[in-house]
Image 1 (cartoon, helix red, strand yellow):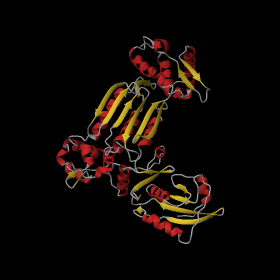
Image 2 (cartoon, rainbow, N blue to C red):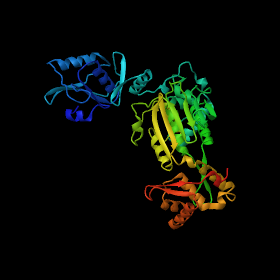
Image 3 (cartoon, one colour):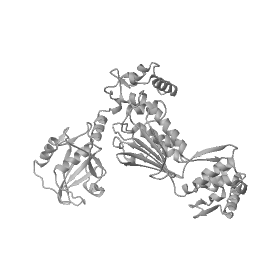
Length: 471
C-alpha cells in the first residue's frame, strides 16, 4: 500500500472504497469484510460521516489490539494494513484491505459486499456466486445429480457438433460422447447442468415467458417457451419478429428494404445475454414484454462478478461469466462473438436507429433492458406502417397520387430520423441538395411537414394524418 493522503480522502468522501468511522468497532470490521469481498478499500477511524475530524486516542498496543480483533472476527481471517496519521492536530487511523483472493469473507457468520458507499448483506445466492468465482467454477459445470446420459438428445448434440466444426473456433469429434467429454459437458460419466440445459430430451423448467401487450393489463398474444437453450432463442426471436412493426425504405434502387421498429441484431443480442447470463438457480422466468412503443427483456439474477450497470455503459467492461459452459457453447457456435461484448454490440447496432433509446437496470432480483422509441417517433408510427403498405398496394390511390415516390420516401425517412440533414438525405436518395430542398418546401406548403427549432439543432415533424393515406 502506498502513502495515504488523508486530506485527499476527506475531499473525496465516502465511496465504494472509502468509509469514515468516528471509532473502531463492529461496524468498521463489517466494512473491511465488505471491501475484502469487493475490490478492497480503506476505513478511516476518527472521521465523522460529514468528513469532519473527531480524532481517536490510541496507546502503544492499540493498533495491534485492533488487528487481533479483526483477525479473530473474520473467516477466513483477514489481516489489513493499519497506520496512524496526524491531521490538523488529531490522530486518524487508516485501515486498508485489498480484495481478498479467497471469497467470501464473513464476520460472525454474516457476509457483506460494498455497493456504492454502503455495505450490503449478501443473500445465499450471492454467497454461493462469490465462492464459485473464487474457485473459478460455475454452477453449470457441476454434475447434475440423479440425471443420466440417456436423458440427452443425440440429434441435438450432433447438430451442435456440426455447427461448432463449421464455425471453425474449435474442432470436435463426431462421436457425441467424446465431444461432450472434451468440452467437459460430461464428467464422471454423467451430464452437467449445462449439458441438460443445452441438449436434454425433456428440457428443464426454465421458461421464457413472452407477450404482446396493448397496455400493462391488456394482452394481445402470450406464449411460454420451454425448450433447450439454442431452440428457445430461435422460438423467442420468431415471436418477437412477428409482433414488432416493419416498414419499407428506399435507398435509390428499385428494391424496397424492410426496416423493423428495432434493430433485430440488437434484440437478438439482448435475448442471448438474458439466456446465457441468467441465474439458473433462480426459479423465475425470463420475461419479454412487447408494447406499442417499447419492449423489455428481464433476466433473473443480478449482475455477476461485481459488474455494475455503469460498467455496461462503457466499451471496456470486464467479462464475468456466471455460466461458463453455456457461454462457451454459444461462443463456439458464433451466436456470440466474444465474451463481454454483448452491450457493446447492442450500442453499435443502435447507431443506425437514432429514434430508439436503450437502457439497462437492476430491478426485482434481475436485470432488465428496455428498448423504447423516442417521443415523436412513436406518434408517427402509423406513417411508417401504413405508408410502407400503401406504397406496395395503393400508392396510386391515396397518398401516392398526392405526393409521388420521392416525397413519400422523404417523409418516411424524416419520420424515422427527425434530425437527419438535407445533405444526408441528398446522399441517401442520390439527389442534389437543391432537389431535396425543393421537395421539402413543397411538403411544408402542403401541410405535411414542418421544421421545429433552428436549422442547426432542430428537427423535422411529420404532420400527416390518417385521412391522408386511408385507414
